Amino acid sequence: MAIEHSFLPVLLGNEMNAYGMARAFYEAYGVKPLALNHTNMEKIQQSDLMTFYEVPKLHIEEQFVATLKAIAQEFAAKKLLLLACDEFYVKKIVTQKEELSGDFIIPYVDEPLAHQLLTRESMYELCEQFGFQYPATHVCTVNNFEEYDDILFDYPVVIKPLNMTKYATCIFPGKKKVYIAYNKEEKDRIFHAIYKESAYRDDMMIQQYIPGEDANMRVVNAYVGQDGQVKLLALGNPILEEHSPEGIGRYVAIITTYHRELMDTVKSFLEAIQFQGFATFDMKYDDRDGQYKLLSIELHNELSNYYVTASGYNLLQYVADDFIRGSKQSLTYVRNRHLWTIVPNGVLFKYVQNEQLVIEAKSLIRQGMATDSIFNYKDMNAKRWLNVTLDNLNFYRKYKKYFNNKGLSNS
Image 1 (cartoon, rainbow, N blue to C red):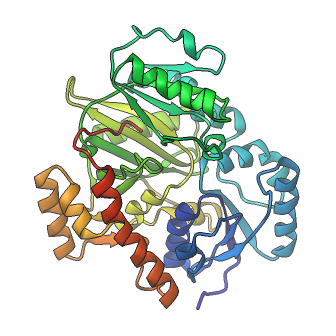
Image 2: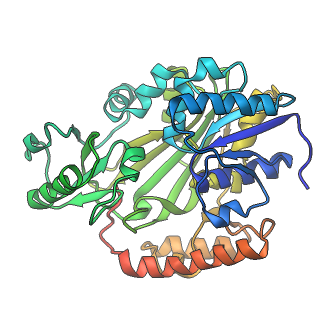
């Protein structure tokens, strides 16, 4: 039974990400967050760790503010902590931050900085000042994509829609979340399919592909307090990603690791730009020059962020202790080795390409230092168990069908 608390987290957006956040809040405080505008994902909706409110058209501007103000009235006795589970709702929250801040505690930066960090070109320009390396990048529009100069950088290239919210609503043959083009003909076919055969009209990113397997990826997670000082730094080594068209690039297994120089680069950057809240830095190690290349910065919590909580440092507790309790927090570097995963062990052991990492994963599992954030035995009624089990079995089918050993991630 959830303990009655004076605060209530309100989660907006992606169902899977919301589950990891809800689990972290429940484990820290026994509080059940309120989750708004979620689709019919049964294994999540059957959870006992959160309360669902179905809100039609929450994404519409007028409905967004009106709905949240109604929620604030309904729970007027509580301090409401407003958190986004995807980039779309981060942008919605920061855009309406001034209007919503009277009813909600909002642990996000103001709109100008958020926009700069969430726009790929301006993000790279800002990060370059602080020593981050990144792959060569070019942005195409629906009006100029046919004029793209193929000599800007060599093939293969990564092609990715920059407005994933609008792209998600498009349906067309061969649709993928991220594309790899190995030559001009493949690049032209991808752009033609997206701009000529679908309703997508927003920008597309072309980026130099960084070779290497899934285990070349790194993810740095940080929490920055409202005083502008970094409180928590964690570094994860994703050892396996999803390879299906709709999920390519999504981390499904991470082992925590430690790299002080890389973590301190992130710390210096966040404090210099006067950041606050959560930040996720996705990078890939480039064997060709021995550099970590920055791919993206996210301001929302993803499902894989639960690896930090699983390692013993509850990421969501940092924000609640900071903004709700006003606790004094010192800087912590996560050093604990822990395996986080959402796939069955059979998939993990078969498709992780680095044999040493497979050995380490097996060792962590034997030692009880492994966590599946979805297959949660403390939140497992019969219906949820059935849906989670079916999804786990489906991972075997998806990896058999889509996995290859080319290391196609540059997400």
